[in-house]
Image: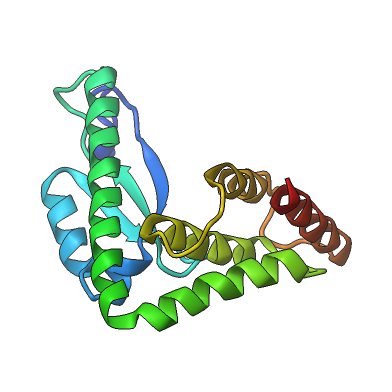
Length: 178
């Protein structure tokens, strides 16, 4: 183990983080409650300032646990949040069905026709596609969504040139045509 001045890093010294989109939990107003509950379980959930309705889940304390235990429990927490998001999406869809379908279809149309695209916009459209797929509202292959996600993860910086935006839009179209 390691002894450090920051108590969050004592123990194994491992810190796990993942970015997770939780638009439905945000829209139904449950995100603050989830943040409190997650904190009590030894994790931190905070806003990702770059993309709306996305959050960063991270471990807080590692003392007394092995790396394998930390990783296993972290995976379980991510799965629980994903399940809560899907349940919330179903509840949100019941009262806002037309809006959800419209958002999903608009995202598909924009991704298929845009000539310029930046990474933040791409991430927002990916959120809509995943929501629509989980609710059975759109017919799109999960491999295509995952391909788009890989594109968004390959970014070198938040700010890209017009040429890079053109190239990103071209690559998006290629993935969607497969």
